[in-house]
Length: 136
Ligand SMILES: [Zn+2]
Ligand SMILES: [Zn+2]
Image 1 (tube, protein in one colour):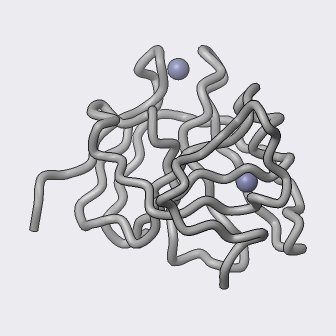
Image 2 (spheres, rainbow, N blue to C red; image 1 turned 135 degrees about the horizontal axis):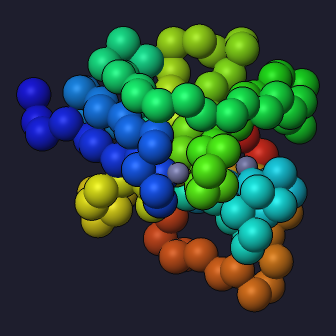
């Protein structure tokens, strides 16, 4: 097993450590990720929940995704950084924001989701697999 994926929010109040490897790494250009990120997309790594340890008290906010599933966004109440996401319909996965990693170079995106919502000013690497919505 490789080195743990460690990271957290900007002020350090929320910290996580994940053992195991990501099962999906993507940029998401859905409207919700745009609003939350303040720019054209969010960037994520998805892990099996089993290897995840989280410390600190994140604030949680539930939103109904385009798919109809409830996603819970977890962010730091002090510094406001978005840190992780969980899904009521898929409790076995845990999603982190790529730049919350202590070493964001470990993010190796291979896909773009919700490319149908992309803006011309938010261009993506054409080598990435594009999904108009979220693959299942
Ligand atoms: Zn913080
Ligand atoms: Zn999204």
